[in-house]
Length: 439
Image (cartoon, rainbow, N blue to C red):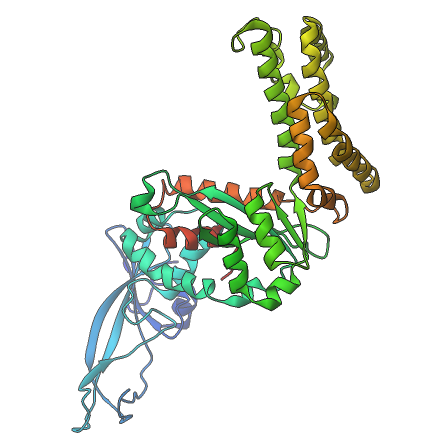
């Protein structure tokens, strides 16, 4: 049991350097002198074992000159923890040495000028990475300020970020953009960032998406520059490059990843088909009634039904769809457009990839000839992206879904932090949260 006054593991005295205390506290390179609870804090006084020390400048054995108390923030438990390190002070006796005094350093305990223990920094990084913590929340738990926590954590994240080995063994690469702030770009720089994601499958065929980097801008130039910085070995190792239908990224892939197969993301292809149906519905609504959809209008009442898959409709929804289409002969255009979108969607739902590819090729060959202008435009778009569209069925269903999942993690952490003002801090935090940095 703990001593009622000192909290030490021994009831013999308030000062206990025993091995049981050292094991309990678990601080490397020091032994416990005293444990106390006061003012809602657990205060652990430690010191290093006695040993001779040489002067860092001349190497002459130094003479002890007392100690100084150094208060450190440690990993919190039920209460906050303070480590009081009785740091040894040494004096160099060599008269010719310019260094007169110096203090001992224990990097395993704390950095030279740090106030947070090494293990508390590791704990903080783990909380940021796995528990969706914020710097402000960690600062509250440690009983210190935001800046103190970030100044301790940032150097460790920078070391991980500059390590090029984290780019090894990437065979499938995804790319997407997102908005990282909503203020004047003249004050905070470009709103858009391009994110690169590792979509390589493991030995079981599952994708473990992880964020590789975030660079300013949403353009093919930004993506191409990042690919160029990675080197030939990285680029030659990438076999599949998934992307959204954005020509800038496709140009960068064609220029820098000549050996990779570009794959158009399935979600965005289906989204293009759904958008085309919605455009037809709005046009027919205006042509027949002369105004936007209102409650009671047949086409307005089925707008959500038109976005659903045919196999998911209930009997009641099918009846509403039939009634809306039969309300006016002009509504047949909407029904035909919906059937085209369902055909496009069905290509991705085939269990047999060969069957899905046949449907995809049929879509490419026929949609551009459709008399409905919105479907014809969709067909021309798919013809331009034909190779990347069909590649989904030749690469084992490669897609950009993992990239969208990483974007979801990024958005979550941006909301938790209530926004960021510094893009470098934003990049480091998101790399850690989305698996790009592994301590």
